[in-house]
Length: 594
View (cartoon, rainbow, N blue to C red):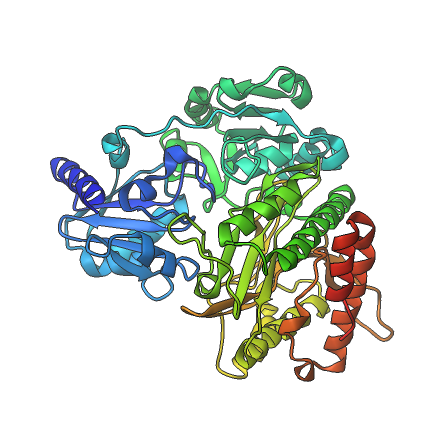
């Protein structure tokens, strides 16, 4: 506690010296990455919170921490309550809090590299009533007191083979260039490292769980690319791989390239939800003619080509085999071994690592027994680690990064005898999962229009869950990928080739958590006799049994029962040739007809 109190005091002393009334600390780096490197873990340094979503506002006499429903319980466990107010951002947003706690003339300081252009505009609107002033700092105040701050990452960049990418970088650039020319744009400033990795067919290792090289790029309507990346990351042969249309330049040249866009009166596209405010202000200072719009790589990246979809299917078969081996081991080990949340997580990682295309986890595994399963993004530690004891539910949410695809799967497992309530809640979640897996919908439908399908059977008895139903998934890229999602906030139409998760859940704080998650690809559906609209649907990618011990069969309709039985037949037929005899024995039992 004293460690964080000392850091807060140092920060406040610096704020007072600069005349700042508030300093803002987002969970972000200059690339707006989901998983930030150690050098950008400023919230962890200041508060002890290690989740992937958070925001801190520090004032002279108070400090507030904000996160979403996934992390509220974790925040109360990690953050000193005597130093920080802890808020669920769905009920009290940072903007609302700032509007209530600032006064006229107060200076609200932020690092312009860590806030997007849209974020700064929202901040200004929130402070309009209190008449506080928003001011960008030249240097981040946290960095000035973080004396042993880690160095920025510099992992080598490697080429991504066409056998997995499906299209060459030149082919991808041609599509984007055609779009730029159609919109009379001279260039697009690309600030999302995932977009750059996809566009140039490269991967790296700068951030946890996602094979990204952190970098910026400018794609010109001529087809040329300026790629600004730390030279320490540039391995031999990389220039040859990206081709002579791509100029690899030092990151220090990026500001000058932005200035040049202004001098040449270029018409530039920039994504206000992705680009750091610093970049926008640099373009303004250079008097560049820029317009806000979506990153031109985002949608093409999301719509997987046939090779990428084939790779995702193959990756899920191998991932399913690893899961079946793990579940077979778990059933055998529980009666005789001291299996804990961490040892189970490590055992699953061993099974995944047997595959030579496996490159690591796609996110930190959520391995939670009992009440820990009710913490949506729980992370077992040496302090919290618990034994998998009988008469509990065990929630396991995990995924892998394979050269040919990214996986993400959640299964809830009965350890011992589940209660009637557990079976009821699990079956309601399963019914919602099936409803979303089997829906047919017309072109133009967004995820917001489908989200209710997964919640309806929980809503019927006054229950719900506090997270989105599904997120987009990349192809050997981010396990959370936009622009598509299945959530109340989704505004993007689902298109063939997109991959989304289907993961309804239910969480009883302190007792148990339930989630059933498969990945599924958006696909064209056959024409229906008499139909008047082109219809889309989902093809399930994940192949892993759903725990029959938790299902109340009488709650399932005939249609739902048929779906489950057919899914288990597919799982059995796909996985059986890939596992050994003990795992086959377990698989045959786990996929019996209901």
